[in-house]
Amino acid sequence: MSAEVQAYRDGGVGRIVLDRPRAINSLTHDMITAVRAALEGWAADDAVRAVVLTGTGERGLCAGADIRALHDDAKAGGAGARAFFRAEYGLNALIARYPKPYLAVMDGITMGGGVGLSAHGSVRIVTERSVVAMPETRIGLVPDVGGSRLLARAPGETGTHLGLTSGSMGPGDALFCGFADHFVPSAQIPGLLDALTRDTDLTAAGVTAAVAGHAATAPPAALAAQREWIDACYAAGTVEEIVERLFAHGLPEAKEAAEQLLGNAPTAVKVTLAALRRARALPSLEAVLDQEYRVSCHALTTPDLVEGIRAQVVDKDRSPRWSPADPAGVTEADVERFFAPREGDELGLAGPARSAPVRRPSGPACGPGTVGAAPADS
Image 1: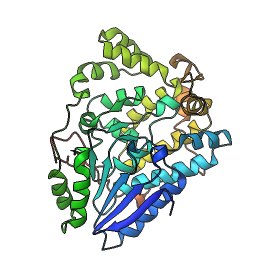
Image 2 (image 1 turned 90 degrees about the vertical axis):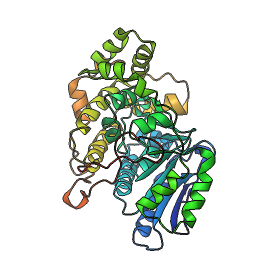
Image 3 (image 1 turned 60 degrees about the vertical axis):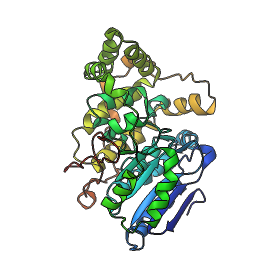
Image 4 (image 1 turned 135 degrees about the horizontal axis):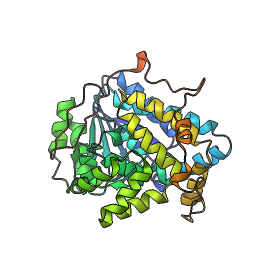
């Protein structure tokens, strides 16, 4: 077990607590391994009837992977990063098909790998402090951990908007976009967790009922009110045309989105658009994770990932020098290389033995305590 993950049983609940608060519980390979070991052990343990994921500290559940370590490993060839991706994406698939209720409390910052640990669970909670995002294009990477599937299935083109701009969601938007199911005020979380440990009904229905007893009306979804311009602009076939439509639309929000998009890594933005469009046609989370593994591994070989992390985290000058510097310099062949099969190094989660249905609600929640119906092909 990692010293940065607490895993223990409290009543009939298996508690997983990410415990690296100074780094907003950013994930290391050891933490991924520890979470998987706990889940695999509890899957066959009749004393554990439900699992709850939380994080320590006041800032958030999880800010994603330890990108400084990713930066250093990419400069050294990327072998450790590839092993991390393989372990992390396998864990995401395990969470999605976990045989017992898996409740994630997405309180505070929940980004990247934090989304992967929470948004594929069967019961996903946001609070008034939640900030949910897949901000990978900001550092030269592409949404992963199954995030490209979540973004691709968000209403209209809202997921495309979020993925290309690295935009963040508050609790209302997270519910609207299908990243969460319930809004529970942060002050109610301790009482909910205590109730679960004392509850004798930890079936899916019982857990949902317990959550409903602590839920409240979520704040409005800002993105829902912006669907008209988002859908019209992001339905374009290329990044260049999307940018043109955003600038031409006339709304300040559209212009701001164009500027945010153009500040991100041009190659990552173009690959993200392609990944989201392809994810819509893929039949399962596992198939999407297989695609993401190809994309992420190829990103390790490009200069933008190291440069993006340098600018954001290492030197913190916020002035990345992308290569190419603008979308026009990224060719179709450049994009296609990210999706090319990796001889001898495929993730292979979508094989016959790993194709169990994903147990994840889909679509926006309708109100406190509401869980969307899981799609049959997920």
